Image (tube, rainbow, N blue to C red; front, side, top):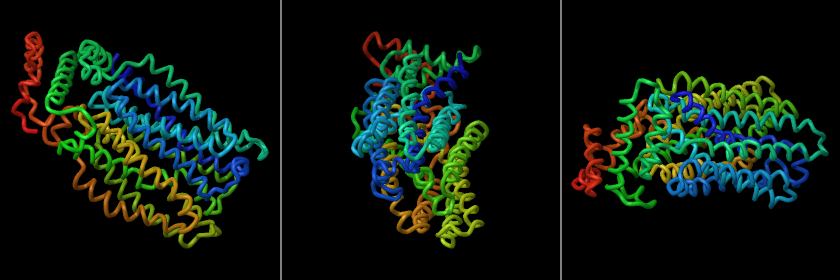
Length: 500
């Protein structure tokens, strides 16, 4: 089936990323509902609103860690299905909420689900992708996150046309989460397991069959066999050279370095302030004098700009220019844009100067464009690429938990209070971080991974499987197959004297 099947598989799995975007974006419109605010006796800048968003992110942090356990034990498919099932329960609780406790528990469960999905979907896509199109394949995750934001905005916009006395304003947007969640639970039964996971579990025939189904184009049988040999040899070498468990990621220098790369790229994406703006943009527009239905309309347009830009990026640029250069561009551009936004807002705090307000909205839009041309897709692609097979599930779990969700939880709780108390000065936090930490780290530390196999990327960090993988991979795997009858494995022999 080849490339078309791989793209379809990756796009469907990215329904999990759609849930990520929808669940993250839906509260932007819900907190604009006067009925919702009255029902829970709160205001937009209250700690209650911060708690509703931060419990979502806190649940996601825990969910991403739990996903690391599930992926290694039960596989990539099952983990994605489990995340969707938990989301289904959380959506029902939110939509039926009669008090603050129900909405908070529902948000925690939705966050738990999104945490599982946010780390498992990119891993599943990465392990199924061809090296030459892996950026595009994993980039579909960010694309579907953006589409989730779009759908949440317009569902919310339409719902807000209901009378202020109607709970439909906020219950329907929250209930809509059940549709993609149910679709993903059922649909993943028809998707194949990751070929690398199958090989790791010694299901070699099925792993070969799925690899061929994903990448065979009628002319590349030799490449399929070579890729299989490389995957199998590397996995067997890793098994022979290391121990199981979570602590191994921190004890082995090479793996610790790669884990830090994954954590860093996720944290840097959060420190662009794009999610702070995404969650609380209606508050920002209110401060710029854009209120009422115009506020939600502008938010809806904003949420469309990012996905359109990201689609252009993953189709035409990501697998050509790589990961490092776009991230460097994005961090520099966003720093400059945030400086402009802070300067404009500082002289227009009451939103009375129309020209300055329009310029302020323009720069907010520029942030999502710059993010979509850089960290939007690159953060997920780079994180999934730099982890070796033996810690890929757990490593991505830790990177997503700490770099994405812990940082997100902090800002979700703090941001509405900060915007209410210190206004434009809050931007200075992100400006200084990007200028002093993100830009130097991307330039001096990050490595380029474009169009390399996941096994070849090991070489960028000092060698495969903590040792040296022979260049004659095919011959060694054949020898290993013959040696199995006598109980002697090439991986075990080869790595007896490897330097760990």
